[in-house]
Length: 128
Length: 161
Image (cartoon, rainbow over all chains, first blue to last red; front, side, top):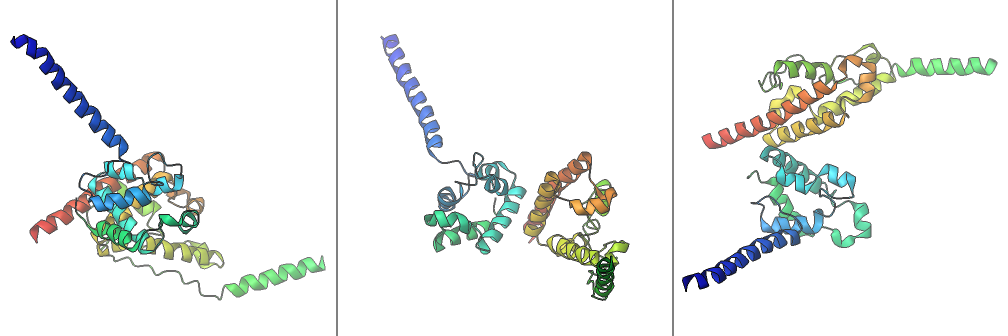
């Protein structure tokens, strides 16, 4: 009797396990990318929406990718991340990003005041 | 022929005339207590490379060759040294804060790695300043390590406060 329940129970457990596993994969695939674990969600949202399009490992914008690759940023050591943050802050303070030429074709890509403040506050922080 | 002589004479007058325009070469300072090498963060072999290949533009210890005093090349030298020091001055290393140090070390890894530094025009005039692949790797490895050292020092200071 017990054996009769054992197989279905294992099957259900197995199904749950694989469902959980595949769901996890799908989630990460659906997400644009995985940023550093402790990156605040509000910062991540702005980066995903306004920066990641050009600044990612697969970007066709070679210059953008060379200057900053968010995928590489995520994988880099803390000192590298801080150096990148310093440079990000400088670019934001100068109003150089997103580039004016890019905004001519895609004005909706402009950072709002609130988004700019979010990125600047984060890039000033020296936290891990 | 006559016009050729006039042209040559005119050019000579201009060349002599521009020698009276101040070259504004940045001043040379040999005593630099805040120098990066004095800070102990640089190994001897890397220090030697930095001195040979970088210090003429990126420190207060610029060595000006003869053409630095002859216009118009003096203007170019003055501009390069002025801009070089503004961008990174190893002599004033201790004046930089932690973030600036990290950014500059990171820039060193990029510029030296991509071969944009030392500048081509500089190595053309100073072939001994050229870096081979081994030297480039050495500088990059040092700069990468130095970034971690700078950060650790900052963390230790933060813990003490």
